[in-house]
Image (cartoon, helix red, strand yellow):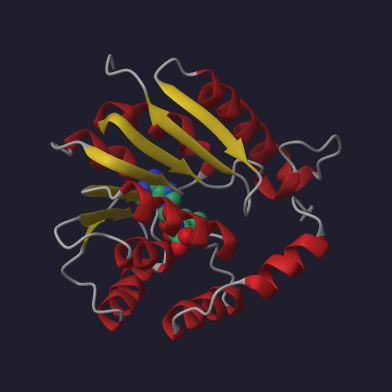
Length: 217
Ligand SMILES: C[S@@+](CC[C@H](N)C(=O)[O-])C[C@H]1O[C@@H](n2cnc3c(N)ncnc32)[C@H](O)[C@@H]1O
């Protein structure tokens, strides 16, 4: 993996990190030990700040894995707000449900089990905030499906847009080549969409943030 932020900055940021809930730290350790790809802690802290500042009523997450980011989002939601999370892996859902229960967030998070590509077209009501963190080869299709169910002025928050540094690297190892290409091509679509005002920032593995500026989709 290539570095996105200098190691000295990364260490400094880690030292400055506010005290976290025990469950957050346990889930980070579990993910690391079991190679579950979850949102980088700094990007998750940033996501929490975004949720707290934007106060979305309806949030949609695509790709919840073991529920780490779902719990972090749900903890920041206002009393009547909800998170809908789509996940295709049964094993992940089982673990996520246990963690969500431990966090006391059963009534805040509704899990949809299955492939987001099939579930999204059946979702009836629009969302204020969408977090996209699924298989990278599906990003383009998912983005196009998600735009119509994002409210005007709503936010889409997307992980991995610098792809471990390989999106911008001149030399990419063979095993990362396909993913790097997929991300590069998605980034062009995302940054040039007339429907969103978008930016990619070097937090975590590269976060894309888009605000929907037009309703015509
Ligand atoms: C990177 S992990 C998500 C991590 C999680 N957002 C977090 O930060 O804690 C990606 C997850 O997306 C799920 N996934 C990938 N493509 C999907 C799809 N098309 N529909 C539903 N789930 C999908 C995978 O099973 C995996 O659990």
